[in-house]
Image 1 (cartoon, rainbow, N blue to C red):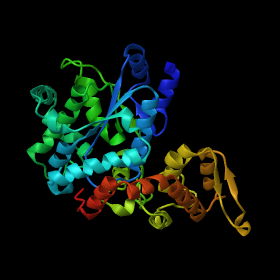
Image 2 (cartoon, rainbow, N blue to C red):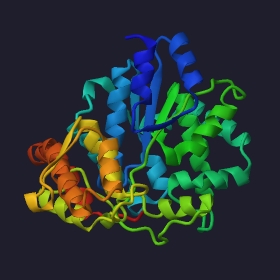
Image 3 (tube, helix red, strand yellow):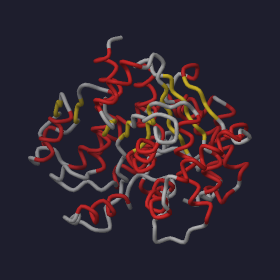
Image 4 (cartoon, one colour):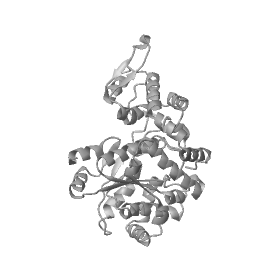
Length: 364
């Protein structure tokens, strides 16, 4: 496969940012066996963001000839008090995450799933953590804490300050050239870019993917014009397992999907920050090249759409009612997720992990 095709796959949506395209090209030209990774705090049920969006990028990079490592970061989840800090339950959640990506079509034989248990017996890992920590001020460490789901204003324990040095150390200890994570992980990856060569490693090339918007209306609407205030308002409603009303889980029943989509925030003619259109763009049109909006003749009859841009334009002009859009997106998601529901019904171990997560108290 030529470099142009590999770059196209790596940069393919839901990729939102590559730091930078020039660096990515240079990496592919000089590194014969590049490695990518994504790290996850196992912390409960799997929604479309953690499941579908991340699975898309795993498959894209694998197709591009990149070795992909998935880090099941149980220690990070424990430090961040996920699932009440219950380490056995966190390990069960990690296994649940693994089954979720396999159910979504990630080839198990093409991904290396990494667990921290033996990793943290390696003194060289902790030496790297200290090297990273020595290059960071306390102030910067606090600013990066949004990657672990905390705001600066919240009470913080000293363990929280270890989070970013450990995440950056993971990159170098795993031999990662491409940290492929969500946009909310950007601050940690920029630290890795800035200090990698300084502490004797390399400058990684981060690839960040889009974060799905939650289904509920932001507390502030219309959104504030101030960029910082707007970012905070949207961050508060990103799809989250700890706020089930914001999320569609990958194994939700058809009835649950229909119900959640029908209640989703979807203001008429509003094409920006619309969670239903967000799903259409990043999931539905990833799976299909066209979409049929089924409507009675008295409401204009069926509407055939050949691209997301055509869908967006029709909605913006008022040619497509929010409920018709919701019905179509809901049905499409039901069909896309059918193999996942089947997998969790038939695979005994997967079903057990799902039951454990459904019975667990999701703390954040």
